[in-house]
Amino acid sequence: MDKIYIIEDDQTIRNEIVQALKKWNFQADWVRDFQTIDYEIKQQSPDLIVMDITLPF
Image 1 (spheres, rainbow, N blue to C red):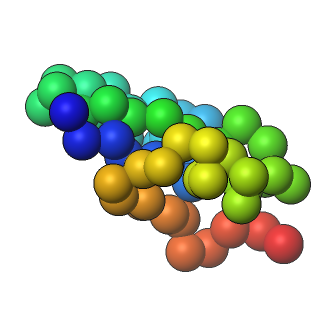
Image 2: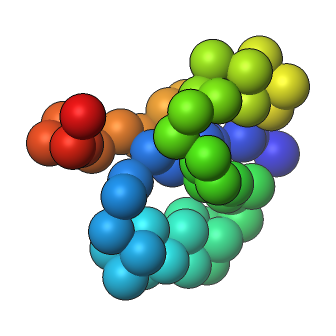
């Protein structure tokens, strides 16, 4: 099963993306703490990252 990691700050949008991916039998996970994105990505080792391009700094 392919692992997809979601980086999205809007909880509603993030949940919609995760639910849609799970319907297609993808394993979807998301960032829980934006301060540790690098660490989380290394731990998750996703096949694909879907990222919001307008994240706040």
